[in-house]
Amino acid sequence: MDAPFRDRREAGRFLARKLGHLAGRDVVVLALPRGGVPVAYEIAKALEAPLDVFTVRKLGVPIYEELAMGAIASGGIRVLNEDVIRELGITQPMIDAVMAEEEPELQRREAEYRRERDPLEVAGRLAILVDDGLATGASMRAAVSALRQKGAAPIVIAVPVGAAGMCAQLRNEADAIVCGKRPEELGAVGRWYEDFQQTTDQEVCELLSQAALVNH
Image 1 (cartoon, one colour):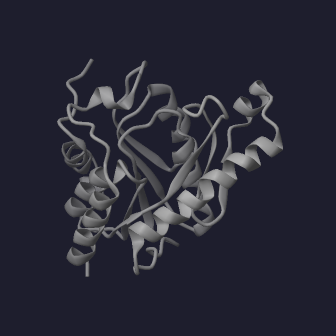
Image 2: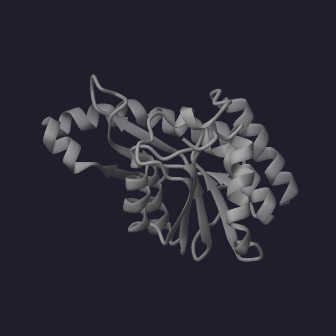
């Protein structure tokens, strides 16, 4: 196993070096909260690009909540994993029930993180979607789909670590993917960090405020 990143900020600086060729272009950096925000902050700082959150909520399978059957994203976007749904015999009422549970948290996070700031305009701009790791890919798929509908182009996924197979799959959906470490067996994303403490809502708000001041 490769040496783990010290923390998310170090992982962001690592990715920023790989994305340096995008500096000077009309770029927006969009973080999947919460863990993606410290990573994305370092990328936005290095590229001198605006930073925003792109809120996505995983739709967990009832009883097996860690297993994703899809995700929802800002703007009423829903992405479903039809293979999981078919294999486990998940019904539409079950999907609707999980969505009804997750939608308020999606709205809460949008209000909490953005405060009075309007979402960044993404139409016609190069969007870099950032998370702290790529496991099932459900959240990232939902984010890519939502950004396509909003007219972002091109779309680049940037993650410090992701399962090799998932990175390959998402290459077909985004225009490019930068994946720092691509193990065949990912395990838990936290294995790839020395410090993987949960990012708090307060941290997210502070980093977004700092980024907004720099780019004001």
